[in-house]
Length: 355
Image 1 (spheres, rainbow, N blue to C red):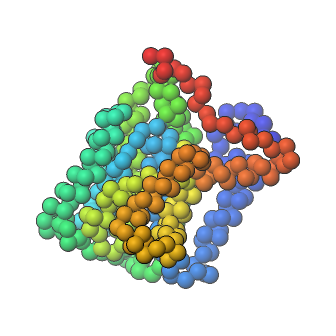
Image 2 (spheres, rainbow, N blue to C red):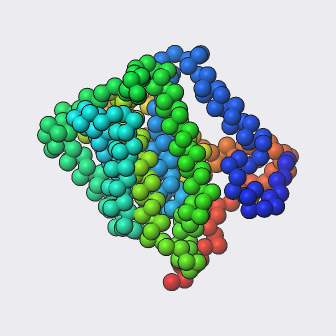
Image 3 (spheres, rainbow, N blue to C red):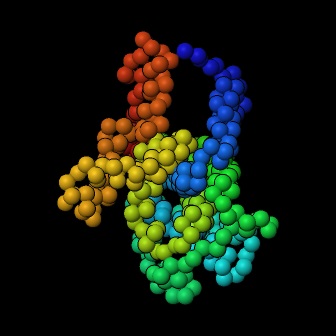
């Protein structure tokens, strides 16, 4: 077992914990960059979906995992990003390199308007926007394509057409790595620490001078920007978008992703993205083993999502990444491992209960 002693504040906020961790991350990045050399188009497309969902998951993680706010309508922000990007590209001829950040910014501003709410009102507002957005896009007529949907133009960056799986894969990988670095850097700043302080104890954060209302709106803005970015990329992955693509089911999938992956961690968004992309394949295998009446019932997928979410909340609230950390710790300290090594935090947070 290796123990790290941090002797300064700079050591506590550096990008990597130590050289060993930096080596492993760089090795994973090299493998990811080399993936087009040994994987075919199908697997590259699947990995592209993982990267896109991980970007959306990082946004939801900033909101729910780091600042402690709840959103039941994150798919609505993904939809706004997807439609804004597609409309800017196809109707106004905006170059792709400008259209994607503009769509993310538009989505962020919509999120900022909702981020002024808090508590139960915020949960209801996000639930409402998920329903309203789908209806508004569906009733948008020719501008949004209505329920018929919109075809998504191809990607063209400075005259270079991104029209093959390996090119799309590398583009999504670059944006995915950029989103991780942005999130990691956010957590190293005063703003990131303020978000975590608000999540752990809003009363304590306010007593230390933190502008709680500002940072909550800031978290919602960032979360919506990430969702808008993922929406623009998802539109290209689908080639054709309809309002039903981003309904309540998609919001539940995004929430399931961060809970199953490990809420409150960057790794959790990545683990959850792998899980959510692979889950339909696993469910199709399970359906083969079940009686036909159950496998073909319309609500089977929703029931499976709900059961998985409930199971993780009850038995493994730290998610897949939390389980990975426990396994890693077990082999590090074997045979001295004790189950009580990992206990849920926040037991010291009594401040709200004393009000």
